[in-house]
Length: 409
Image (cartoon, rainbow, N blue to C red):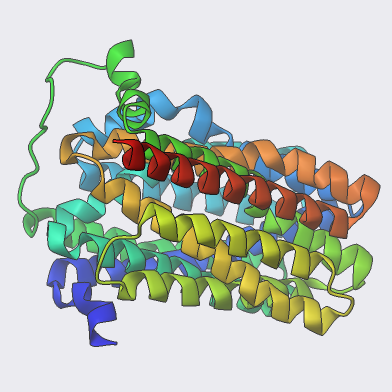
């Protein structure tokens, strides 16, 4: 177990980690409140409306990809993160004021979600690449795993607390609490200004152009194993990561529950996610393609088990397995892609990886919402299972093809 948390021995990473945990909890408070606000108050229990908000929040990862990847490699990442985190706090404040003043409408939530998505498009690749500025290469894989532990621990605590807070004080105050949660991370970023070595750019000094925009894609394309992993990631994230859509729909339409039950289901899934993140952080070696191939298969089986669970409690328990499979795959992907990439290209490559994962989630959200509204919430989860099966089959095909090529040589 001490090996699992070895990166925390680094004082700079420990400072960053402590601020990120609190900020992540606040983020999940807001996300849960936002999803519940849309499906229970601003629409006629419409999962497609939740899907639309999710799309607007994550679509900028695709459309802004060239700029965000270049920015993460060329700009001081600490300063960039300070700006993006500040803007996120302002957007949360605006949404909180709208809700508390009883003036909020669906189009305003959509607009705030789009603004948050644009800011997060710059924040996400910089945040991932910033870890390599704080820790050594030897600590990087462990630090990536611990970041996932932080994120998913927040996903365990945040939705459950949000469900209770929504019932007690309403969604507006949940947004306001999120505003306050940004302060520890902003403080950590401020304190790190003199504690980190200056990171020099390791590539061409000229401004952004189309060639640089495409560097991340080119790098991945020239490493075919990375290309296949990205396709697998798209298939799994496109539908599987849209759990707010199908879980909110299951809560409202199948189990006829309230906000606290929705928060409970998200937290149950987070238990598996935390377990997956800890397993990844505990590994002494970086994840292999072989490992991710089997994890994709486990994810697909978990989706089918969740979709076919007849009762609320069995459904909740099966979500633990689904969270485990999803997190093992996504965290292993992030760790593998960072370690397999030359440091000079990490920002651009991670921008592509995140755009595929989060942008894929955006593209899948309206589809999952449509399926949930017209064919039932269980059908939308079955769709995730079929998508995961396709990802696993692609992995098996490529792995055996590579093995056959090596055998011939």
